[in-house]
Length: 274
Image 1 (cartoon, rainbow, N blue to C red):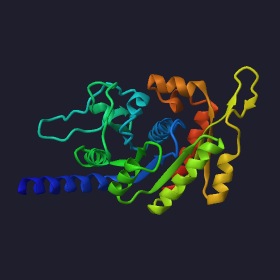
Image 2 (cartoon, one colour):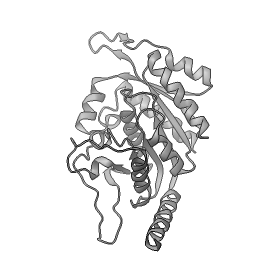
Image 3 (cartoon, helix red, strand yellow):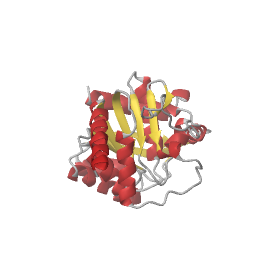
Image 4 (cartoon, rainbow, N blue to C red):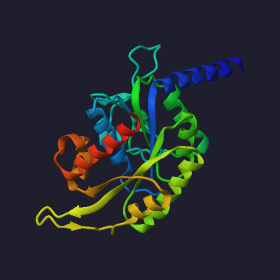
């Protein structure tokens, strides 16, 4: 019993130590799946790192982790430099560090069949059993909805500086996105704003913009809740391609409209915390 209590005390000490290294904590959430939240998280992280900021990406989507694939660290395992040291997050690029449960699995096809308490436990391990570096920003990629994982990580991080809501333009997506705004507010997390993803498709042949998912949902929601529309990212096949290849869209396609909008969103975030 004494050993267990001592272990818990050590974990709490490491948790406090890690949290003291992080200047700004941002959770990226969405009301429903399939809106590109992980893609947004990764490109914001890369964009911040390209601005000279030291950035960590924490993937708390336990059942469907995709950050390893999107950052090109798929297949890499967490390791400690010495036997008596804690492992460190995987370095995915200059100034960018990644932690995901995918880096702890032997087979990426294996499902994780866990209930809430086990997920809470592993998220706590992410923040205590790992030796995080000093960070300007920690971007937390949450699974869709307002359940165990986002609730657990917000409680463990204690003072979250802000949330970013990601949604696609159609009404059915914003029906759920509006719930995440109220979720943030009930947990006293400031809503930094909404990013509308897949906001129109620019035809590569004629240049015409087509609103495949209609338009106007983000602006209406921002008006209703008095929050900022951080940006509208268009549908772009290069975003899909770069994600599948584990390459940074904002770096390799920096002249594209989507990458320029990501840069504008990044500038807004830096300004908020400056």
